[in-house]
Image (tube, rainbow, N blue to C red; front, side, top):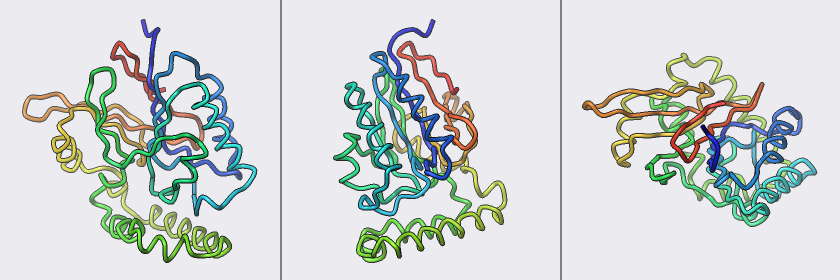
Length: 242
């Protein structure tokens, strides 16, 4: 039986007003939440792009209102940056009531230690992406290149970055777009956990493996391009990736 309290994990919704399907699926999820939900965790790439908290539109206002409605139900919402929305800032968190989670965060869920990540840093074979990520995550460059720019220039830059990302994804070999097992084990052991939850790769699955005769589990959240993907963690320990 899976009745009782539960915690939800989602990632890679890639919300964009030109793709209403994902937004409608997210809205359905939010409207279904009730008092049995202990928390909602969003592990990156919630938005397709986010060029600054000052970039307002009716669509973004609707998303912010949806997130705020979860907090109004006294359900905590935790938000982690992804590679698409790393510019989500303080104003967003103030307006939504979400709590910011740094990438690679260790928490405890129903007495079980678990590591939460977006997942992009686990793809260590994609060296070109990791190099670009290091540059884009530099706080000084973010202030210089993004936050001080007019919105019109930021939109153009975001469009160019999206196009470059699509070209890179098309050209990259399949193994480069997935995690490397060596890095998975290293990060899990560094954080003293045997359970990892992440997104980014768009390859939803529950992977179980052994390291030194100890059981480890890696749960990959799915993208929302065609249908929603939610990990439901029940207080009795059962986990459903649906």
